[in-house]
Image (tube, rainbow, N blue to C red; front, side, top):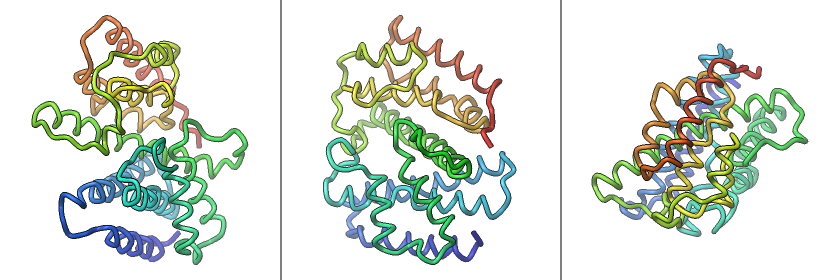
Length: 269
C-alpha cells in the first residue's frame, strides 16, 4: 500500500466521523473518544511494526487496518448509545459492513482488501478463528489485536483514575456493569488457570478490569508485552481493585507470567 492510498483512506475516515457529530461537545464526546482512540491505535500499530522491522508498505497496510478497525463504533453509538456489543451489535462486523457498503476499499489490491477486512472482523473476538490458515492475514490480525488492546487498556486506566479522583462518569465506558460485588468465581478461575477472562463471566467493573489484565495472555508480540511492563499496566490496574489476598494472588501470577512471556516471546512472523 502506498502513502497516497493511506492518505485517501484517512480523508474518507475523517469525513465519515464528521457525519456523526452534532457540534455539541457533550453529545459528541463519545464520538470524539473513539476518533481519538483510532488515532492512538494507528500510532501503536506503527510503533509495534517498526519494532518488528516491517517494510514501509506493510507498515502502511497495518496503519490502514488500524484506521478503519472501529468505523462501526460510530453508527453503533449513534443507534444504541452504548459501546456494549452484548446490548447492541458486533461492532467489528458492523465496521466491515460499513466499509463494504461505502466501497471504501474497492480501489485497492484485492489481497490487501481481504487482509484488512479479515483483521477488522477478528480484532474483537475472544480468539482468532482456527479455520484461518493464511499466515500473512494472521500476522496482521495479531498486530491489530495487540495495538487495540494496548490503547483500550490505557484509555480505561485513565478513565478509572478520573472516576476516582474527579468523580467523572461515562456510562458508555462502563458497559452497563455494576460497581462492587467482588470478583466472580468464574473470573478468578480463568485467571488462576492462566486464561483470558471470558466476557460472559464478567458481571462487575472489578471483573472487567481483571479481564483487561488477562490480556497479557493474548498479546502476541514482544514489543506489546514490553509496553505493558514499561507502562506499568498491571500495577495501575491493581490500584483500582479491592485489597485482598485473592487479588494479590492474581496479580503475583500475572506479573510472573508477563515476565515469562517477555523472555520467551516468539515474534510470530
